[in-house]
Amino acid sequence: MQRTWLIWAAVHGFISVACGAFGAHGLRGKLTERMLENWETGARYEMYHALALLAVAWLATRMPSGAVTAAGWCFALGACIFSFSLYALAYTGVTKLGMITPIGGLGMLAGWALIAYAALARPATTLPQ
Image (tube, rainbow, N blue to C red; front, side, top):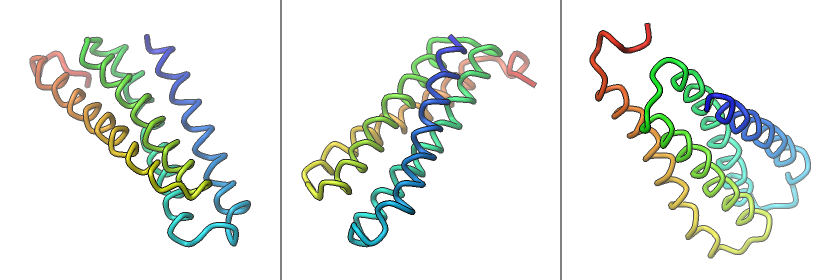
């Protein structure tokens, strides 16, 4: 399973850097300041969750559990929904796309809650050092 999370982390990291660069160089002057901020927020949160997926890959080897696996899926899919809805909103100006964004945010929040649960559900002596 850790291979899956490493692949998801790499894909999200790659897309985040590409979209961040495109926003900074290709969209500046073409989008309103507010829409450019939306684009940048999408890229930033996608990178945060690429890093979170690296942590999930590591945790999958140290303390595998259903909660860690579920956290990985929440991070991977939540970041897709959150970031891509913001990219689409910023690029197209269709503000109704912003209604989808909180669904991705809830997914990412669920991922963090599942990581906490995975840690709390194990005896402290069995947590990774």
